[in-house]
Image (cartoon, rainbow, N blue to C red; front, side, top):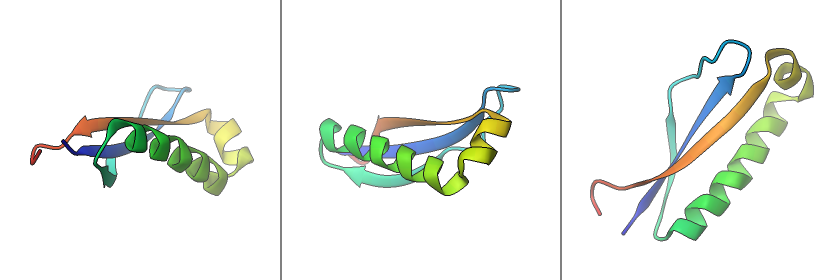
Length: 69
C-alpha cells in the first residue's frame, strides 16, 4: 500500500487554506507521517517567523492512501 503526503497552509485568522499540494509518495504510514513533520518544519522556516506570526499560519498534512495502491 502506498501513501501520498499532502500539505496545505492555513490561516487561523480567517480559517482559509491554500489548495492541498501532493508532496511525495511513501510505502508505509510511518515514513509518510515522519516526512510530513519534516516538510512542515521546513515550510514554516521558509515562510519565516514574521509572516507566520502576522497571519497565524499553520501547516496541515495528511497521508492518504494512493488510489493506485
